[in-house]
Length: 378
Image (tube, rainbow, N blue to C red; front, side):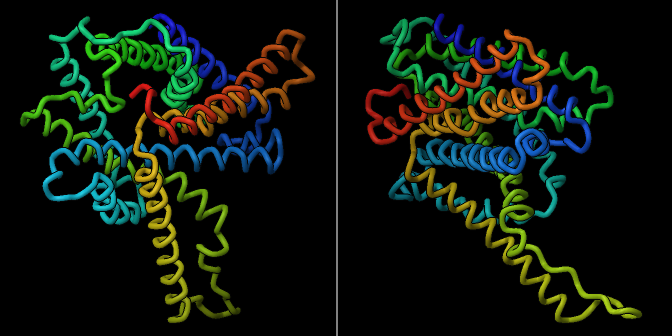
């Protein structure tokens, strides 16, 4: 537990430092750097922008994959007499999620997002209340497991990765100068919550703790309602999580295929005709079909890799790690290298190197875990 406390705290601090590095680059570059991708483009050109977009797509689709695994594992227990495999639960909810992803504006889903937060909080309280009698009695509690440390690092990075929201949050604040205090306070609260809840559950269930903690709840009505509420909340959160992927694919990668061409306007004429309406309608259905395909990709990944902890570790190892540590330090090196002193350059290069090493080691361990999940912590 001491190793976990230290690791979680260290990753939390380094994640916060990288956020401030990114904001320093934004301030230095000025101009129209209004997003993570803009900073990447200004610092490293088109390559930097593409790297940011790739990591956003991979991480957000990974989050959505984790949501589907969570729903599948929690609901399969109650529908087991009616379905053959847990995979069928995931495929059964795909049509509903696809329809939600057709919603043109996220404003409609905003109330459900707040509702999801309340349900998650109620889930934490319910798990803690039911686990209280088992506190300190967890079987096979081990002090330190070196072989699973890479998976822990990947999951910890996954837990703290929120750097993509830093610039949008600062841009939307009435008093942007208060951003450092707000971000640090939020990280302190989140870190304490992670450490406290994780240590509490491990002390209750030991090595037998499941990767999805709600699986420890008893078979009663309250537990069923909590699980059902969490699943519904995640289903409404899914379109919000995958929306950045839609934006990147539709407005960037496939815009020629998915965007209707502007109508030709002749002098003295209006740009309205039946043919143009048909063209716009066909492009609308192309975008909807593309969204369904992206949803199907996340569902397929959830079926192929059903271990929730491995999915989280992989997301933390590759896209989240690159976004949280590798890219911010890389951009900072490009922007501030000439103005930094020796110690500043040493810190940036060291953090960048550690990020690259973590990507390689954690990815290898996660892939090994996908093929041989036996013996990995759940």
